Image 1: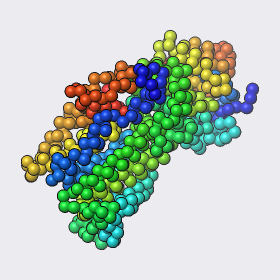
Image 2: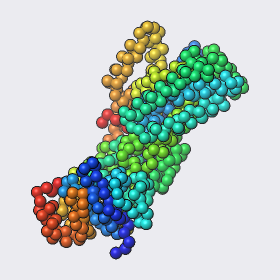
Image 3: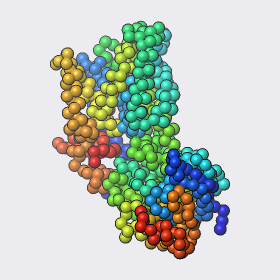
Image 4: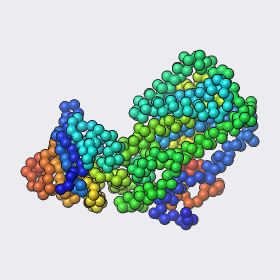
Length: 364
Length: 251
């Protein structure tokens, strides 16, 4: 790699520029431990945000990248939560193995149901995912002997993380644990979307009719990504069960499926960071609104949603991307972005917008 | 003439009472440039859909080389070298041309399912994609999202995507559809310049282009093959002149 301006004819450099870590990304992750110092009384909330962000990331994989709309994604979140809870209740409270078992359970169910998902599209897909979610929810409700039904799963007790760190009341361990798992799963997801597999997912989203004509077995790709997404959602659910030591039917219900979809659209689907930004904005807004107006706080959530969708149809990150001064229309040199995203006064918005630059602007 | 690369035997297809293909017998030798002509509704695109596997025939067989591919999925036929393009641009609007063609190359080489390795590690695949694009004069614009390409460039990208699969038989559904006549000659020059190993079947309405670039012509009317022959024979055939060339409906 040379430092000179790129020749028009260097395709490798162009692709490398897309996958490169940007300064703003590094800054984002460096900022994530700040709540330990600045908001030590809100670590439970921070942990909850990290878990929600991980759950949203799992939805982004199928919705934002492969174009599979799901209204029942809470099924895998809840499966992970119940699996982790039940493992602990059965007498094995070790968190990491619990997490692994929960992700395997969610992944298995994800793989089994993916056979239906891969054959369905559009409205039917929404109905199928919704239906599967409802089936699981009512199944858990009916299986009182196993899940505790509407009373929730009682008796979840976690052992200290790595044998050393107790899950404390303030959430120090909870947030550290959730954050590290989120970051690791983010790294996996980031690698995945910049791989040939990730490219083929974007191809399916962009034009599912063309894909067979270039030799892509669409169904097996969809099954693969749906299973991976289910695993990640299951991990998120397991984290919630382990860090709060309770599992309720709410982990499986329709509202959670709807909420994660809202968060993703709020942040910007298919932008990798959309789910993370969306989770932060949504959860903080909910926390604040419910404080201001305990009875009617969903009113303000509604107002937030309507205004975001009206004014920022591609979500928060999509909206910020429009402020980006360098239009990709300018061609290669601009797309390559030779300069680092400097911290000039105007650089912050621009930098945030660059989080999104590996992806589309659907509005055009 | 060598053994056919692609042949069909008595293909039938109807939608309810509408017969769209009847007794289609084709036999395409290696390296020929076949033009498929006929009025609108003659079943030309249906025939391509049948051969490519988008539609299943009610009866008949499709043989690629030695192998019966009648029951194979479209992507399995692509893997065996039977590839089509689309009359209406069927591209990836928000992928760059480079990404699109790289995807097709990765697919052919069997690495498109790999998720743990970055795309940047696949230098050979990217180089090959770039070479294909360059050979079709798309090298300079290949970093732009497809939706920003000029219409004629998108038509070329249709062909580039097909070439990335290394086809043995290429089915081009009106490759110059919507392209102004002066530009379509350049597009067909690119097609004419393709490897002589490659067998090409193309649908085209412009008779000047057909007679200039096709080595053989198939005329379809009403879901049947009316006649097949050298361009000069077709031009002289009274049935063709009456039913199609001289007729009011040029399509």
